Image (cartoon, rainbow, N blue to C red; front, side):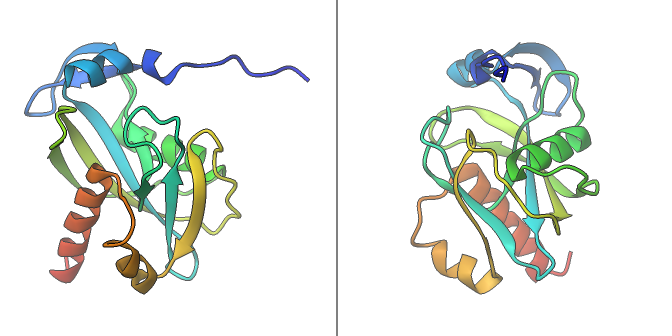
Length: 179
């Protein structure tokens, strides 16, 4: 059996964008993170047939926020890639499925990292996943589909990725307001 070539995430090319989300250049992910360059990211809320949200703990090898929990699947948008394509790619990769419907875009926001890692334009999506999930072991150390009540109970208890938590709080606010 032939093994897949090792791909270093720090070498992935990303678009660098300005405050208005216009592409101003490209750089490797490691450089983007090291220099705090503004880039693009997607957050996809995956819900099962019962309406539960997929929650996972990131692996200890992640470049940012290792071993923290996240109520979204997602990640960075590659150079030349659109948000919608990145949302579907990331959701299928992290959930370990293929054939998901196109995630529905909900809203965008500019995230400013309080830990000095820069800022990123973020687009939040939602997708229904009725398929059996087999999360990517290089990305996901633990996972479960949680009800809204279970997730709400874990929010103050578990260490969350800060940008995922910010996106979750914005999503919850929009849902309370009926948007």
